[in-house]
Length: 423
Ligand code: SF4
Image (tube, rainbow, N blue to C red; front, top):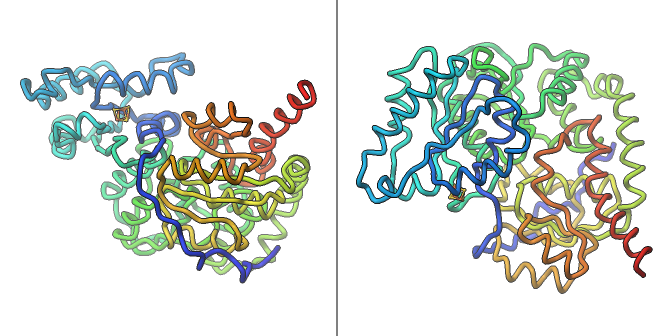
């Protein structure tokens, strides 16, 4: 295992840009959050546009009654001609009467609800008083004004933290909504290393939500949880500093940092992870044959850009041209910057036209970007990877490391095949 490179990017001057951005809004997070939290319902207080976004992002996956919906703000609400609060209360009462399985109800704010300044935190308090203790009503914003799509999960988890009970227990908390199968793999590894019990935020059901206190230590599994990190810190919990668990190296460093916090030697971690780590390295090597030597450009979108650039450059042999993230959180992303060799432009925020100029000037082999930019770039002969796939696909820890590398190899292989068929 390599130790952090002294030539890392932590001191690289950051190019900060503020201009037009091309990203999905925070409502997108509902798609993976509703699968994770099995007795929660996400009620978007928004317009028909918001409802369409949710339906098109998730509609094809729905076979049972979904656990999200939209309370549509009509024109008369937006014009202030109706009491939107009264209508919201009526919608919630109707929903909860029909769905007694709901234990947590999230009122999710949107651009329209923010524009008319509908106070959803007061609505959540009022509705908790009315429908609690059976149902807890919370609120957060998924609005697309000044946000990017992974901020929805961050806002949701941050909204949960103040409502969690207090504890003095010294416990590890895993923070981030992982697919159940991936979460189980992580819990299993931690148990073998000697760390148990481990609690998760979010828990799969309301009754299993963790308690928090000054002896809680937590490890983030996602790099976009800045608000949740701040909320947990306010509750006295302590974060374990580590790179994120992507790839064989990232996963090992993450596990070793957690183990060190509990006084467990790195040799114990090496012993436990030997087999899954070897499997991961083998799977990564297969995809790396396509990736090695290729140049990659990250546009700011998922907030996964820095850990993924670290994985792709160090474990797959790629060269990063520019690594751009919507927000650079020095505290959370510092360990990643330490590991990325100097060279790429590190940028924060977006001015899409200026950034596209840099893509055209550097002509990378692969550009990671949103859906709106991918098609025009493909038409210009530039291979792309949709950033949103990275949050819909299980990519954390050892067993998914090969799949993560393959996600980037696939568009390059497809392009090679097309070039061979149509030289
Ligand atoms: Fe569009 Fe805003 Fe609704 Fe998102 S929250 S779908 S950006 S109107």
